Image (cartoon, rainbow, N blue to C red):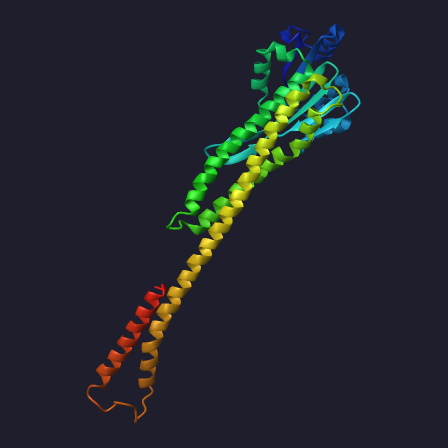
Length: 327
């Protein structure tokens, strides 16, 4: 469905024909205006008229309708096709979700296609309409503003994930150890969130570098410094993500090492108690073999002496294991 359709002349929104075909003709006729259409999760039938009127390439249209694309930039004869993946952080569930945002940039028009709820288009449009000096640069200004909003939100999400990681690290290195299975599951789930983030932010570096350079059709040549700024912010966000991933790997390794140490301690304790139990068991087993001729078998103090020997042996083993830290 078409969410918004407007003509912008000299950076200001103006009233135009309700039919976007006529609106595009009007924008091109003046030479100093462009048409911006926003579409949300269109069906093939709904988008067919947009495709035919704007002369969009069939392959790009297929990507825009199918979604599930990697961030990319593709140049066609009549338009520029850009895919962005906005990221949202669900604070209640501590999860990262991604949407998809496609932009068609052409002669006097911008078509934005949004999938999911993570695309900040409404806020970007309102902000641009409040800054006519930016909108005056035409469709390129929309591409820059949308890219800048998406990348800046990457940094905000990375900061939220950093807070969650610090809490997770505190649990991992807690002296009591906590619930080992729950901690391992949390680390694994966190790594999945970071992986989702990397899939959105990592592949966008190439398209931003191309936009920051020269020679990209349908992009104002004076916009290169602005896209370089977006590329710098994206590099910062990707460094955040790489750092989070490394710290998570270190936290997982530390958690596994702690589990190994605790298991070794448990095994030493079990072995120590088994050794102390083996001594009286051995002595009792020997005297339970019912031989006639055995040491001190006929004496009255033989039984308490054997008990005393067993207790003394167990106590000696206990002191030995205690001194060596096994108990």
